[in-house]
Length: 32
Image: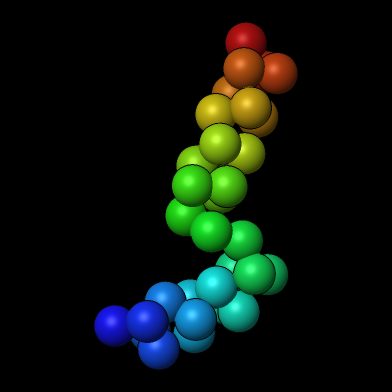
């Protein structure tokens, strides 16, 4: 389980799902 998580993190430039989600929200807020 954690092995897959690490793989995903490396793929997504070491960002966690929470961070990516927050970034998406920030981008949307900035556009609005």
